[in-house]
Length: 152
Image (tube, rainbow, N blue to C red; front, side):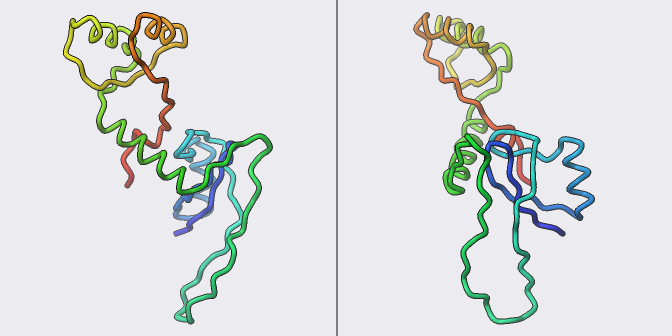
């Protein structure tokens, strides 16, 4: 099993586990390896040092190897990335996905035509502006694809 430190174009750093280097490369070429925060499939390996447990004494603490993020990328600290992904998963778990019917369903709830409930879905920028102009509270919130999947 290979544990790789990975990074997307946005500078998000995450870990991936693969059966082998060939497995990683194959999955990457098929677009199966994606950033859990932004779903970017342009993934690169970062420098990482292997830790071999050969029964030796605990290694001394060393500073982690850091690879600079691409120019212009806003890099979130790992704890903040984890907190954002946890929040996104809670949102997904506690809302109903109405897909592209979001604007229509939000209007129906606002006008009392259907029961109010927590929903999420897709709306165009124009639909979002129309909802806001009608006094319907919406929050554009891009959810990473990883938030919609269960971890194995």
